[in-house]
Image 1: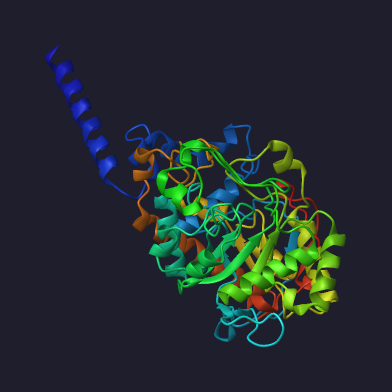
Image 2: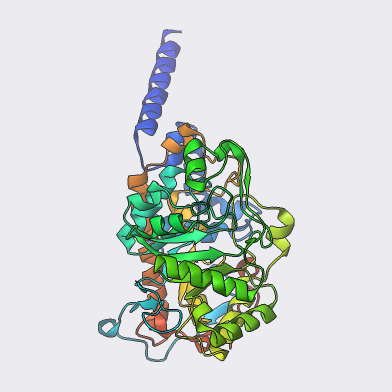
Length: 476
């Protein structure tokens, strides 16, 4: 009896020690938020690699991102090896055409950067932006993301030398805290730049443009997960701070209009772009989802005819884009996928002679090097990712984004869960992910005989068959 009591006491002390350790460490959010029991997840993750021959669910079966994709991001963010053994584990939907004589190590160069915006002529802005990275952070709003997550992204972006978009929720102090370059997004509700009636406020625009970190403005027409519908922020996430940033009512659901009420046609869109660019002195672009390529053709024709209305960049979001909350019917069945949309947009831009005038940013589940390199081959100048960087922060795809109870604190509204995400640690992971992406995309370019990724062309990739997750690439 005495021995049993001693064993029980030792077990309790051991569990208490593990509990204290888990709460005090900062590397693993799951353990910090769920001490002791969180170890079961890491045990399953670690040993799962050896046990998968006994299970029915393959590595590429999960949705919306399979285990192989998530694992690549996790390993990159943690700074561990991404080498694989025993040959390829994927059935690719496309392959890159390697050169017989690839670029030698001593002849390799990095991405040279590209200028967004022009300094003279119709449609010029006072401060064009020299963008130095081809891979950047797509729009994720403070409110949809926790303050700890936004802070970590801002710090990580600064470390990696990449930009981050505010998302449609407006500019917060957490976006600015890390010192990263910022793209201020203007959504249909004009959060952060709206007046009391919800109209565009020129005073607020000037106030935001006064921040030297704000490098560009982006007019959001739609995003892939909900084309034709505005953003949704549940009332439990509309804190007094978020309400003040956005200019909305505290603790009430915030649903953006399904389009800008003051933009009803191509001429109106061009006038709005010119207005924002004239007020801010920054490059101005448009984020949209392709439905009818005829609209893009007409829009670019108007840009060529009226260069003062021409956007400095367009962000093409595929219908597979992400969000915290959207109707399933829109998320799954509306909007062209990026594999069809991007080639359309790039071809029409070049056809109208806008290649050096309008930069293209591609987004929509492009979070591994193969898909980023594919997008650059198809004509994108840059690629941006939201969910890739969420995984770098520690997201485990729990599918609780809209509930406020994200177990890793990334999209949480519960203070206890947010506290588990340590911005200092996660900023380093964000940076590692971005830098690993850069290195591996450059490696693909060098294998194709190119000195840097800016030289990618459609010729360098070719579709072969339906690949993992149904990613079907268009190519020359």
